[in-house]
Length: 271
Image (tube, rainbow, N blue to C red; front, side, top):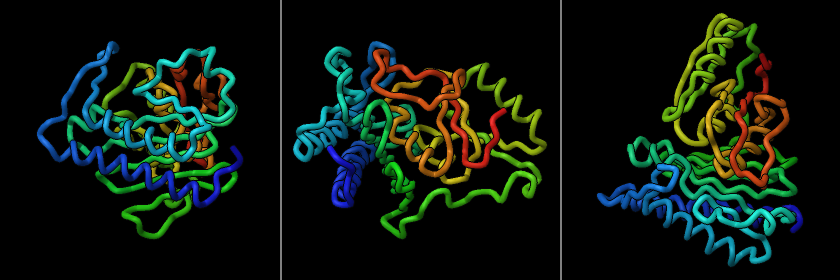
């Protein structure tokens, strides 16, 4: 597959919105149909319906491109290791936030080429905000189908000019001693630090926007949790890096578990 054209992108954005509509229909009902997977993470009817919408549409439009989804992840590594392109899908990122009805959940679709995301879309159905990015063309945000904004849109005018204030975003549902230690280090380095919390891949997206400067994640995530939002951060001028090696996260590994990572905004300086 060659580079996605404008028509392709519009189709995928529409698929993402359709998945969001399927999720909202369940969200507004009194039946989430909650089950629990082997790892004790929740699964709802909305996860399944969103997954069906995305997979059915992508298979129809791009039958030649394989798909790896959170809900259909049991594909042997020997089969997928030679994939050149593939779709990496999280049909409902932030299921715990969905169950809590706080609106902080997303639909994530990424196109990965040779272990690197080259296109990504993140849609927050309740907020009706869509983020997307294409390699080499930038990252964008659109709220309620209004004017398309290029990211970052709320970049700070340099730390020194802003009293060294930075914003750290953290997970609402997952924290760790290592995360707290990292935030402590930020507070020791900068004189004015604000810590905020939000669910799902929205954490990466607000770093891409410029609303937050850094997001440390010292806890378990999977490849489908980060691929779409990683390219959105990268195309806004930021980084999503392995906390140990400082290399960008890579995809289609034998083990689909991500390493601990740090998301840095365009102007954030690594500790």
